[in-house]
Amino acid sequence: MNTEYIRILNCNYERLALEKVVEERRYQYCILGRGGIKYLLPCSLRIMDEKYYLYYDISSKQNVSQSFGDRRITRDWMRHFLGEVVAVKAELERYLLEDRCITWNPRHIYQDLERDDFFFMYVPYAEGNEDADVLMEFFLANIDYGDDELVAFTYQAYDRLQSQGVEYLGSAMYQDFLKLTEKVNRQSVVPERLVEQERLETVRQVMKPEEKAVLREGKKKRFFFWENRRKRREDQDMFRQDLLGQMRGYAVCEETSYGKSEPEKQESFEEEFGKTIYIEEKPLEKERGLYQENGELLIRLSHFPFVVGKKRDNVNLVLNDYSVSRVHARIVEIGGEHYLEDLNSTNGTYKNGLRLQPYEKRKLEEHDEIRFGKLEYIYR
Image (tube, rainbow, N blue to C red; front, side, top):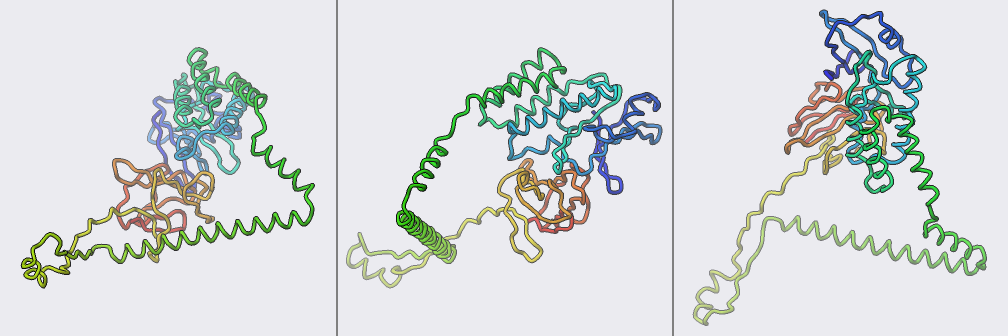
C-alpha cells in the first residue's frame, strides 16, 4: 500500500493515499471515522488538493515489524496475538464490518507496549489482499526456534493457511494453538532441579541446629573462597591490561653474541649490543559508541540493531527518563554504515537538532549530536 509516516502537532500518523474518489457517506467510512472501535487504529478521511487520504493515528504505538531485533516471538506472545485476532474479528462482526478489509501485513499492525493491546489497520471497501502470507512469513522469520512445538505449530499453520485461505487466520488458528498448549501441559514433567530442591528442603527440616550452623559456616567459607578468587583474577587482568597499555608501540631488542667469532664479538659489541628498535603499531579499529556531553562513554555499539528506550525487556539501552518512549529509537547497520531510526517515539528523535519523522532513517557521522526526547549524546 502507498503509505507514509507524518507528524502533525503532537500526533504521529500513517497516511494512506487512496487511488480513487470515495463516497464519504458510505457506511464503512462513517463508522470508522466515528471511532471507538476496539483493536482498530483510529482513522479519519481527509481531502487535500482533491486527493483522498486516510489518516491512521499511531501515536504511542509500536510497529510490530520493528519489534523483533535480538528478541524472538515466544509462545506467550503468539497466544496473546492470536487471541486479539479473534477479538478484533468479533468486534468487526458486531459493527457489521468485513474482516477482509483488515491489513495483515506486520508493517501495518501496531502494539501499545503499555497495555499490550494490538491495533489493526482497517481499509474500507478493500478488495482483499495477500498480506496473510506476509504475516506467516514474518512469524517463520522471527519465532523462537528453540521451542520445537512452536516451530511445528507455525509451519503447520502456514500450510493450513495455503489450503483454507485467510479465513483460517482467526478462531481456527487460535484453537490449533490451544491444542498445542494443552498437549505440552499434559506431557510436562517436573524438572530434576526442582526434585533436588525438594529433597534438600526435606533434609534441612530434619537437621539439628548444630548441623545447620555447620552448613551455614561451610557456605560462608565457599563464598569467600570464590569471591577472593574472582577478585584476584580481576586484579591480574587489570594489571596485565595496564602493562600492555604502557608498553604499546615500543619494544627493546637486544642482540646476543651467539654464533659469532671472537673478533666479530669484540668489533660489534659497542655498536650493536643493546640497540633499540622502534616497531610501529598498527592503529586499532575504533569502536563506535554513544558519549555523554562531558566525554564519558555511555555505551559501545557492539551489535545491531541497537534499540534505545525505557522498556527493559525490549531494548538494548535503558534510559529511565520521562521524555523517552518505551521503545524510542534504534541504530541499524546498512552496508557498513550506521543509521539512526526513530521508532514512532512520542517526544521525538533528533540528529544535530533536526527531528526525524516516524520510522525515518538518517545516516550517522562522527561527532553527530543525537537526542532521545530530552537526553543528548554524541556519536563517535
